[in-house]
Length: 442
Image 1 (spheres, helix red, strand yellow):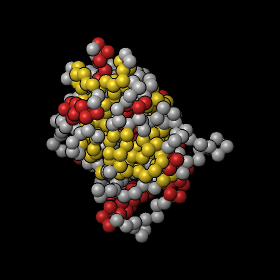
Image 2 (tube, rainbow, N blue to C red):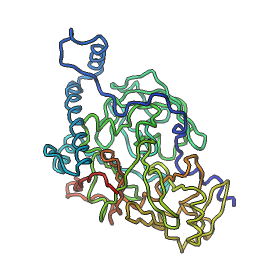
Image 3 (cartoon, rainbow, N blue to C red):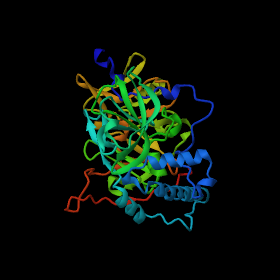
């Protein structure tokens, strides 16, 4: 029994802030953009004039064209969004929509690759990547998390006084986690670079106190929706979209032992095999929530797709029924249901999204050794999310996972046989982009 003590704490801790009472007035639905005008100063109100003056003053010599870029980006985003609406409503591509794989690659080449290598930390506990914060960039190792929205790092990791683009907002933050660890600090507007792509004036938290243990990561970079942001600001990827820095409103993860990756603004054909199964997402709760079926469970299940959680967590009664149907021994500790099976005879557990089944591999399913047996990475636990599941890395290790904000859907495909990027002999990766279809009507 002793080996089970504290197992549930080993998966990456989740924010409790989503359970807090929501304010009467919701945060803006999209990124906040500068209110700019070409009118003469006499025609500007004092408030707008002050805003423009402050914005111009905050632009360094290296960012002299940033305001012009803001105009262009705003128009680009406006029309790309309308094209997406048109396609979703009619099923047809708008006649003026010139976005193609070729233009996607051209934009990526001009602004940065959008490909961020990830590192497997502590034998599949979590995956991290390097983030450049500030000017010049200070390297911070963060856990990219689709289960939260804000980006921040532990104390003394990022030094705002060493950055020419750091702007203190005067606001503070406090985050709390499931194991009781906490962090507090100051919120800055800062340049944040991931995969060669830079989000300007991004809300970034610099912790002054933190009890978050370093498990190979120095903080969190959230990729969920803005309505659960403690900072009341969009996540860094939404900022990239709003500023026209990424060609498509989509990102994708490959959480694998080798060749792990985060692709921003595009999906990569070489990263997967077969067809992608897309499932609609309901963003109203702030998470990547979708529906699916699980072998041994009755009816359709609902859950959040969460790259920041190591395990799969489901309702205890449903998980118990799954293990019973598979003949797997269960043990209950602290109200949590664990499946224990002979190491050389793992059960077959399958998740089905939009009619396409994905079976968890034995390596991904294995969580902890328990004598001559193994504890599965699917656990029945009540973590305060009602009947919903949290589908974490135990499932995601076997797939290429696509988070399509433009069409409000998630997609999964079997990962490629080789997940190590190929090169053309000169050290340049040769991975073609794939197109992103409109949302499924299933």
